[in-house]
Image (cartoon, rainbow, N blue to C red):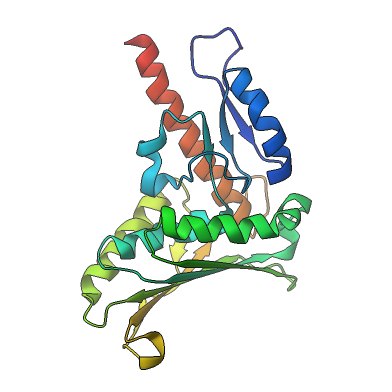
Length: 243
């Protein structure tokens, strides 16, 4: 929370428990006049990815950070859909089992449902699907995400690639460990894909390692995205108070 309860500055609370807990807590935050930045997949407020749609929800009393997988992949889906129609997008988020605590494990169903919806609502795909993999490999793996987008057979590959690269750079401003593992890969149209072509994007999220282990990029990207949202909301509201 920022500032004492009597302060004229905006009051923010960051919820990082579980979807179940946030559903119980949200009415209390609202009653206390607090803006909730929800790091659980409860999705009571608008779904927000800072690099995509933060500016549209600065005055919302409750904003939802969706999931770690969404923060990594939805900006890429949006980058593609801003260039061409995306009838279908699928993401796979793979994280180290050691970086998935009891809250994450309890929220697997909410993760898949909320992230799938974010692929559509925020990312702009007509239909979305999300999969999470908790990998017990030793030593623990760095978070990796794969994005598949169906695209028109005649899509402008250069324009899509440029849009993806710009979006990666935007996310890196608040998540320095976010990167492409390879250039976007394009597959030609196939009859089995209803005549659509496909682009595959391979991402890695390396944690800062300042408190959490560097392999816990899934936790870093959520906290970094939430901090970015909180900072921008606080700045905007502070400007209104002092205007």
